[in-house]
Image (cartoon, rainbow, N blue to C red):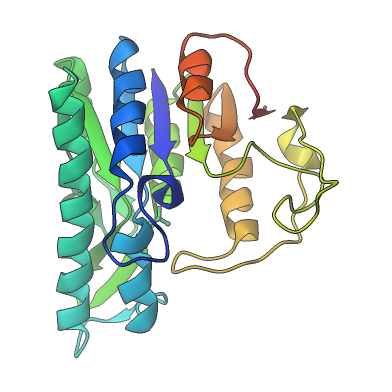
Length: 246
Ligand code: IP8
């Protein structure tokens, strides 16, 4: 069984509020439909989550009081992105079923019984970056956090991150033309200096999660999801341009 996360920066136009990247979504869903193995999908929020979350000061957990409008706006927006993905998967013959994280998470603790049932019945559960509520408080749960929790609960063969970069580099490829891709690396060897922030934290935070994840899965793969062929190769067990963290 594999866990696959489609990054919010590839399935949406990250700077344009609620703009999907439909042609890429279609291609990626096509690739996912070719893979008949058991899997759980996750996707990020992209411009359906981060823009309003940052503008409304939701990036830090806090009291629900007086944030209700922004919270329900973001929850509604990410659900609408999820519908696009789940609908496209079903169009392509994947029995994808949405599992909204705000139902699954009770504070920090996820209850994955529905995910388990869906897997058993050969559905493909789809989770996504969301806002979760517990008692008086809200917090954002990122797709990366969900990936870690799923890895702990289901011990997948791999966790694959389809991102907007080819993998992990020895320096930032967006600012350094000489940056070199790291094809394989041990989680203990990863160190991160780049810290560009969105509503779910910095790159360093994401890498810390990946490091933890490796304990619960055979490998973590970071690849460029804007090149759907690479995801296809990965799912077919063929070599492709990526970083494999073990
Ligand atoms: O895009 C963020 O999830 P991510 C969720 O996986 C929200 O980091 C609501 C901003």
